[in-house]
Length: 169
Image (tube, rainbow, N blue to C red; front, side):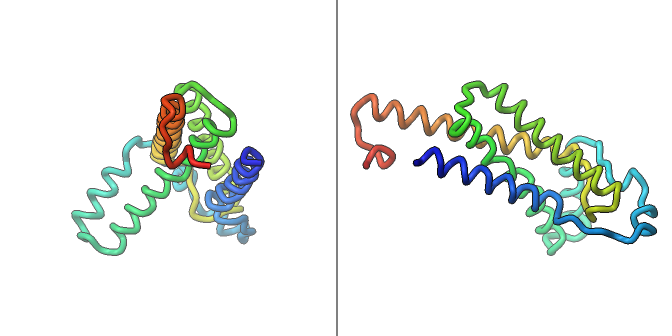
């Protein structure tokens, strides 16, 4: 029963990620879709978010734009944390390297379809960003590491015979 609940929550998670990363499919007028250049949709400078944060802080202080930028990058960091957890719990993945590769490829897929949907004018305000790849992959790795740590701690506690909050039934 627990595995079924985890599986269905994973399906729900995939649907939510699809909605969050596209912002919904919109059919824009063809003229506005063609006016935007390709460079608008591709951000390839790694760790540009740190420069972006510094510039925003220096120019505007702790205003709404700076706080919104922090929130945006934080959301990118936590977006694939559940995927790391699901890789360990649902798919029983035992290798951090494999988990990081799967999370990276998932993030790359999301960024690629954001690029393609943006180029065809089906979504607005979405772009391919190397920073998103970095933050998403880091978040997924953190989720995987934390859940593996908790699983090992729980299994160690059960093996010792101690009762933990996880072990009470």
